[in-house]
Every structure is written in C-alpha cells, then in structure tokens.
Length: 214
Image 1 (cartoon, one colour):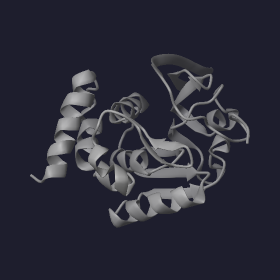
Image 2: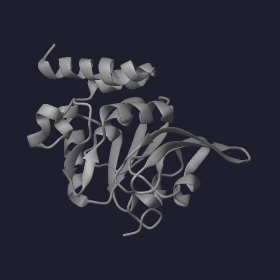
Image 3: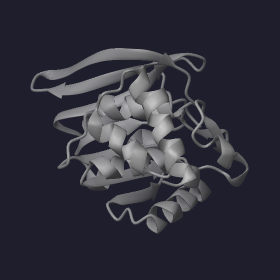
Image 4: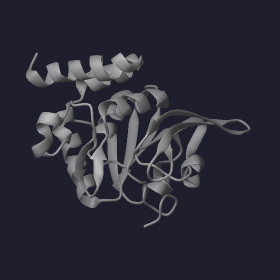
C-alpha cells in the first residue's frame, strides 16, 4: 500500500466513517479515488486533510466529510444517471462515476472544466461527461436524471433542476444565505416533492440565472 492509499484509508476511517457515514459504496469509492490528483500542485500535502481546498476562481474542492455525506444522502444506485452541478476539481464527479452508470457534470468556468476533464480522462472515467454552462439551468440534453447533486449554495432550489428529476428522483443541495446554509434533500414523489434538511454548511455561492445571479 503506497503513501496516498494509506492517506485515503485514514481519511475514510477518521473523517467519514468515523463521523457516521455508513454507505459502504460511498466509503469504497472514497478509498479508491485519488483525491491528490484533483487538487492544485501547491496543495498536494493537504489533499486528504479535513478541510476544503481552493482551486481558483473562488471555488473549492469540498471537505472530504462533506463529499462523503452528500454522496451518501444522494443514495446513488448502480443503474442511476446523475447530474453533478459545479464540476470544480472533478473529484465529486469521480466519486459519482464510481457509484452510477452515467454522470453529467456541468461547470461555468471553462478552464476548471477542462482540467477536471483531463484528470477524469486520465483515470479512465468514460462514464463521466463534462459540460460547460450555467449549472442552475441543469443540462436538458441528457435529462431526466435519477439523482442531482449541487456543489454550491443557492438561495432556493433552482426550478430547472427539479424539473429535470426523473420520477422517484432525488436532489441534494446546500440552501440558505451566502454565509450559512443547510444541506437539503428533495425527493420527487407521485404528488409533488418532499424535502428534509441535514447539517449546516458553508459553500461557495451557486452563480447563474436561477442561483445568485451573475
């Protein structure tokens, strides 16, 4: 076992499983995906640390625990098609690529999308597709989605994302003001939507037509 694999094992046991995330598929995905390849060169030594890391454009790669928790809340099954809003580094998309049959990830910054796509391609994630655009509008071309995960905070849930959920679909998103949010879980039922809240968090703002504006 090399150093990075040891770091991943420690990260999962101490930061994620140790805080109550029990989804074995999520834990295994996080043991497998080389997080250090998704962070900037200057941050390699912090790749498995218990905090978010800046990746440029005022964006971050989320704290490992938050990635694990949101992935577990999403409840991805092997046959699911997933939309990942806010590609960023591409790390969350890689985790989802381990869990789902197909992932579409959308990012508004072209250079982040391109660098994430390069790493994902190098690692062989042929089921993860990166798109450049306004994530608050979703990605209609491949809708509907069984699961949608949003990696930035919104003042309310963007309506286009709810519209792009398949029957019995689920959306996980941080909702609140710019300084404080809670992770919300939205489930599409036969007669509408139900939702619940999880832990308080602080995410970068979701910028776009149905988020915090331009």
